[in-house]
Image (tube, rainbow, N blue to C red; front, top):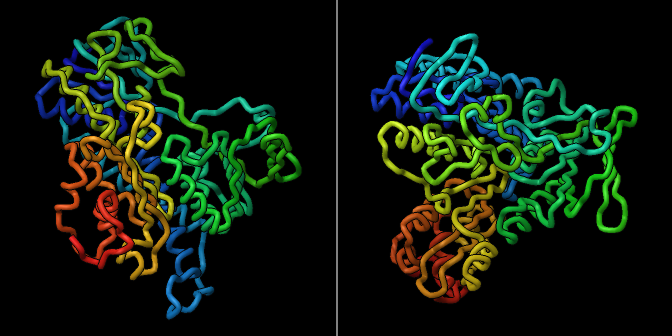
Length: 467
């Protein structure tokens, strides 16, 4: 039996961040990788491959839809689906090697492959070996959640994992779920040439997001030919010839949609089952997620958890930060925590969506009063100059202090623009702080300053560089 200071279960972002911190602190630790290849969801079936394929789709789409009259419509652009998938595999393999396999080798921490199961509070079994430790971190991630739709057991379907490795390009696709993942895959395949229909149960796409943002993104995606239905209740799924048929309710009337492929983008399920958590004294909450306190500590005082398995925010960056915090707290005896309100998040559609802090609805629910302004991207001089006018910026401000509590963006570079807003929310900057900061002209990032200025003046009656 091998004994360690710390056993880390999970080889994704959370586990790697914990292992890195353990290495920095000189702890005797071991990393156990389960399920997906080393690197977890992000590099294998998440951020890396999906963003590459989205960019390929954009590269194919943009020349055929030029913004400028001087550019002739380039119908000669061609696209090869097999080559795109091969290129994706090459990038994934290269990044897995450089960012995970080689990093793991450099940490000086042993790596084991296999399913880990607690057999007592301080012992786990993996690949026939018994490991004992004073402390543990569970960072086992998640997998696609499959809702029990009637008839689904009779119909082949896709999750994001299979959709990243299709053998051929489908002529049509039905996507159930209009969260970030569903929307990214919808636009990806639509730009490849697939006819895409998106079904969403809630009243808007991006159900957890700002309403104005969701409406603007839906408008932009509809202009590209993607069909949307919201407030949809899926009743039955059935095969018919080579198609998958979805029968649903849309208010009173019935809705029937069909596609060669059916993609389920209906959330995630934590990888917490069959781990013997009862034997470790770790309680499991609703849906299988592991509850933790602000220090990432589970109900077992010697066990911490991080990443998707705790169910707070499903982002690679958050998993890594949580893993780092968990390892620091476990090994140093400190009490670090994470401010989730200041974490930026993005959807990599075109235009992109990025948000940080509270929405208007969330602020109203907490404080029953709010001050908000929205500026359309076509009011930004740089956007007008380059004819890239899709989108908007909405800012949520505390009505008494002027402190920025939320910013929500739809714009071609929203994921890059959001970081100024993230700093404003994190450090409780006011709209005056942003207005008093000189911005480069002309840039898309001036949108943040413009929306701050809109609280104090009529920005439709401003010259380009008024401070």
